Length: 266
Ligand SMILES: [Zn+2]
Ligand SMILES: [Zn+2]
View 1 (cartoon, protein in one colour):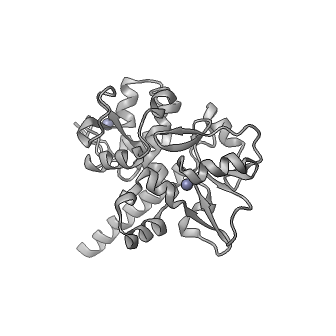
View 2 (cartoon, helix red, strand yellow):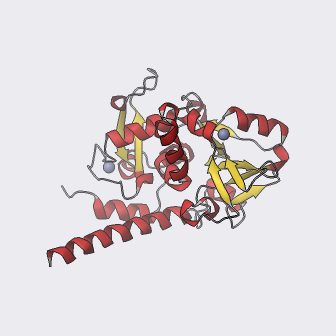
View 3 (cartoon, rainbow, N blue to C red):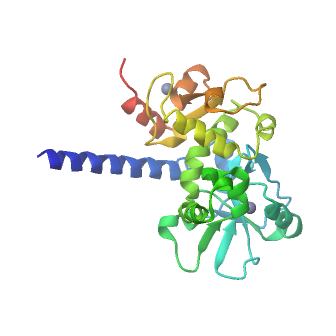
């Protein structure tokens, strides 16, 4: 009996995980905010190309288009069947953007094209090594060659986006400004991930653990004048607690459900 129970709870946890992922993938669809209207310009495969006056912003070391985090690749620049996508201001991306802007294609992190679980033979998207180095994702910049290969193979842009999503949510909820995000170092993705995992994805206010729905976790810089980024310089809070203090904080009903369900009772 014990064994069955253990398996059942495992299955339950797995289902929760899948549900959280599905919600995150599509949760903008029925929203009327500005961010949703930008996302509606994207084709159903999650890409957008032939954009006039393409303007890419670099916020917290990452590539944004109209306040949406996007990955970017360039059509016709790949000799083999591997397509390299960028997500930071690496030198190769800047060079391509200057010389081949017309072939730039934006791709949303939730695009199934980028889903490593559904990698098809003729559509092999791989993350740019220079972008991994620049953002220092998974400590890529300091990793040995063999572990760099593992980081590249396992890089899942949707999972990456979930961990970084607080930046986007804070930005389009006007909790933070694009000007401030531009002052953050290029390796901020690594800094943020390290701060969040240091706090074990647990809200320091209500104690909810949101590792099953990582997009709900924020690591807020306590004093942004210091420009110091050790985990102790951040406070970890969930979107729910932020919303209590800051009413404009964007949150979906699925996310609220998750918080109400898993928030420890006082
Ligand atoms: Zn790159
Ligand atoms: Zn909380």
